[in-house]
Length: 453
Image (cartoon, rainbow, N blue to C red; front, top):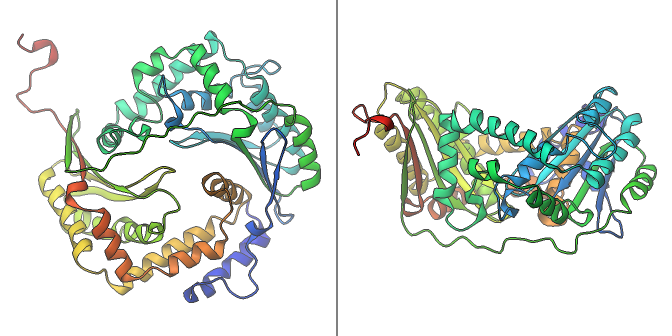
């Protein structure tokens, strides 16, 4: 799926980033993105590249778990229901038609958005436009469909969260970190909500958020923009916009002390997760936080991995990162403690590394290495039609514009040693910690059925 033209040009970017800018004559492929808007509010981003044999077609719904009100998990339920049939397509027919033409498709749900995508040969693009329009206009939402997908989601929840120490840790971390904002509940939803969600609630969510004025279509690769826009206008232009798109206005209150939660679970090796509040996506401190997280947990040579896994042999793995969300951010760390190690010692070593970066500047070579890691990752993400469609849509949904690659690279290059220490000191304060420990139940704990009255 790699566009040879983009890949060759993008490889040259790293030659000039040490000066804080792309090399002379470089053309950011995303700069050619055309932004169109239909009368019903649908936004369309088109980015042509004839050097690739692929087209990526993506529909970004500006709704995720933060937009749920009565029942958690509805946004993720729709990720499943959208593949199950419409008024004119049977169950799985949508998938079969695309796969028969050599395409691949999938979807994902986050706290902020739900995204559907197809990567296809150019000749299949008109069909994909029609199929996506069909399911956004004529999706079947009834009891039979809901009951089927409810069971699928509950099984997914069991496997990924309820039977997973890491899943248990993360599910406990978010409501510990967020007390007011909807980011506190899991994207997959609480079990009781998924079990009880109604058809009426699903139809209401679909009407509010799956309307054209809450969608962004992103198309990148080998296609003709005029033909594609004409077909989208024909198939999507008649859809009615939503009169109201409800949004949460909740602001998370300031945290005023460390919070600690212990989860007892049948686990051989304890799991430790720690999170701090951080700024939302697009904040001026974002590049410095990205570099800080790379120094701490960017691979096996990072500080946390070296100390906890290699040097002191307290953990099987250690990592983390800076997670940017639309309304807030989270800076987090994760440690899978060895079964024969003391979790208190692992926590102490982890927090000692955090205190080091708060009180002492990192080394210049650490910063430069982290800088190159981020720059290479950013550039490599531009080498496919899918990567570019994702980039321009993600930026447009978050900021209402597409940030130039030169701006992104320049932001990374401008970060200094002092900036890294400043953001560490500001955001990773002890009173702002949220700590989750997943531990085996105490040896003398009675089983629930044996407990005394």
